[in-house]
Length: 448
Image 1: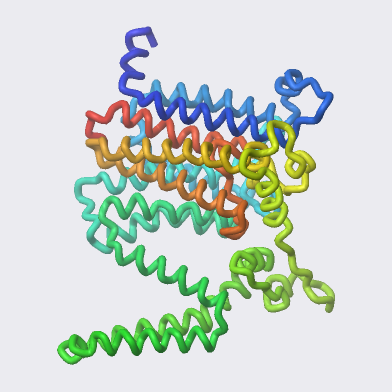
Image 2: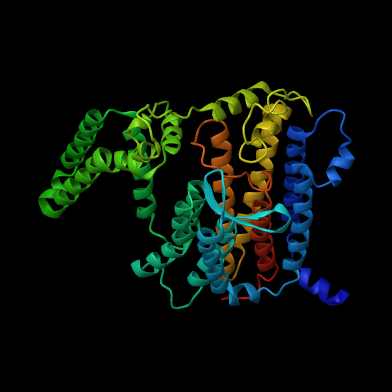
């Protein structure tokens, strides 16, 4: 490609997003360095030897820079033409993990590669799901106000989630629910989001309150609604049937569905983490999976909330201004488990305190705001849906990971975008962002 063609290919690229991306990747490498560097070691040599996690992350960043450059020089029409094929390839990769997958930390979701590296198809499939959803919603014949179109869009995003659950990757499965934000922007009825949110509130209420007390509260609410709508009910008898049906469903969910999920579907440690989030203790003796794994008559040992407690201690020890660079006692002392991956935020909190975390989250917020701006200036439905999918995925990862480290959300193993250690994660977010930038550079085109 000559210089003139190179200028044409990169014309219109939002370089502000690229700078924000580069800053976050650099912060990520710095955070990994802070928790792994040991006094007396030649930091320059350790950065180049490829044996430490921060040196590996630097290599990953170099590979991602090459991938990003290649994407920016690619024709945007490639992503629309091969969106469905990419999606099919991603699903096949996820299915391949059941045959050739490697078991890491109880999750069979990794495919071993040369050089000791591992690929997690569920991460890459987020890109392919975003492209496939954008491709479907951009079709002229698609009317997203119809149930059929909504079900197809839901199947596109939830199929990888189901496979992730089968791979024991609950965290990654939850990420695919973030596509609801993009679908809501394209006309998904608000009632669906209200129903989903109400179900979440009901689950939390079931964990906090005693079954009989919650059933009484639900009954009182139903009776109050009937009283307030008594005039409308006289005109429409079906309204009373609807209210009673909703009441029966809610009572059934809190009495039977929620206990069944926690005792039969989720693993003991998953149920324990969710209960600990609301300040309750879960009895693993009620968990059928834990009972099946127990070969003795001894009571099943409950996992504790050690990770979260140590994470809170590390972040709290940073105070307002932090302990300073390479001066953290908790993260550098390896008291926080998985501190270079899922709990990488703790190193930032201990070293730079509240002020550093606030500035760091402002960078994230500015990036999300910029992507929303990019999404809204697109002429093409394909580009807009894809951009909203990107911001939805990023927002979900950021909100859940940070909430997880401070005990506001159960531990589900979701990395912090561009910060947490991991080649698959960094490559996924890089490709997600730079495909969006490539589409935005051609925003005057109508892509389908």
